[in-house]
Length: 116
Image 1 (cartoon, rainbow, N blue to C red):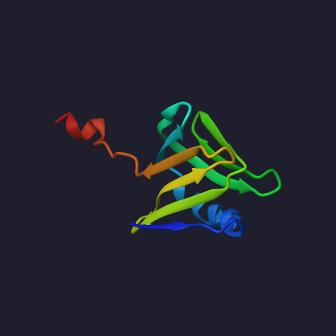
Image 2: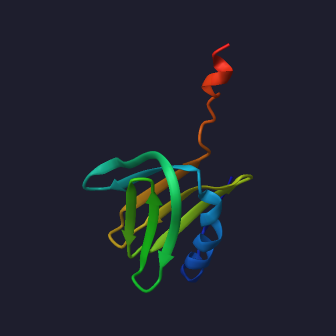
C-alpha cells in the first residue's frame, strides 16, 4: 500500500476519476478531534461517490443514508493498493482528522446454495 499526499489543485480531478470505481464498495468514516476523541460517523455503508467542490471548498463523501461534508479541507492523503483506493485521510480547516476506510462488500453465498 502506498500513501501519498494529493496537491489541492488535483483534488477535483482525482475524485472525479476514482469515484465511479468506488460504487458498490463499503466505507467507514472516523472523525478524530482533540475535543471529542475518535468517533465513528458511518459504519461500512455503500459508497455513492466522493466529490470535491473547489468553489465551496467542500469535500463530499456520499454514502447510502449519510452525506458527509468536510468544509475547507487543508490536506488529503490517500492510500492506494492493487485494487485501487483503500483509504483517505482528510484534515479539515479546524485540524480535525477524518479517516475514510474502503473495502469490498462481503460476498455471502446465496440462500439457495446453502439450503441443500
